[in-house]
Image (tube, rainbow, N blue to C red; front, side):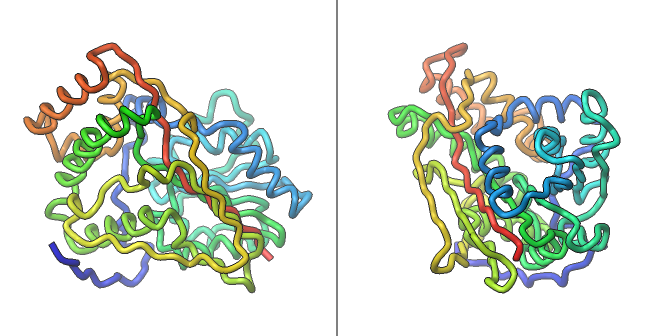
Length: 337
């Protein structure tokens, strides 16, 4: 199928149907399962971000967790920064994060803002933040408007740390060749059912997200008059950041690169990166809560998907056998001039 053209809508905080990821704050079962099936960001991963920030600034007063979801990143940032601002485009997500951060954390050190990333600078003073952390969030936002908002909030020497991980990938090279195509087929079919029939704005939101994923965050532009010391890291590029591609979307995926000469580029293969050990039941649980719209789109079962899970079970070595999974990931660090 050829490329389908979607006119980019004018950005408006009142028009948010392209923001397709929404979960009710009181759906505690979903949030608990979602957190338990995500990769565990390692302490060395956070320390590299903190050390990078410290190399440009001695201030560690305030950090933002943008697109907070359940608040996992905010919890880790409390180890490095005096105050954390937790924000999300969905009020329910902010409420969910607040509920999960109530116990075990000093409430006076965490505040909450219901806001799109693109609007964040209308809620917070210019030059007020030392760090903006955006995990799994930048592919969902209007990147130009969002980055301009981040630049206004960051103080000179402040850090933007944005990262995104893709689908789980078998660590073992043999299983990656033999079983990963089955996992990828399941992923495609699930997303295809969710995306099918999307209205133009929602469809445009999915395309914007897919283009950014396929770009490995190279789509993020950092004008040299605003940003310096751009560092782009990519792990496990033999796999893919895409959760849904052309077959699921029905339109061409168009990666964009704004990488400039002089930026630091690091690519590495690490088959133990954020490693999970899952059996087929754990993998099914991952898929169940990967996206909140899967149950509505698929219902209680799908014959083709069920058959593929049976094939995947056999490829993994039967029920109860655990296999190691790693994650493809891209991370960008940038300093505000």
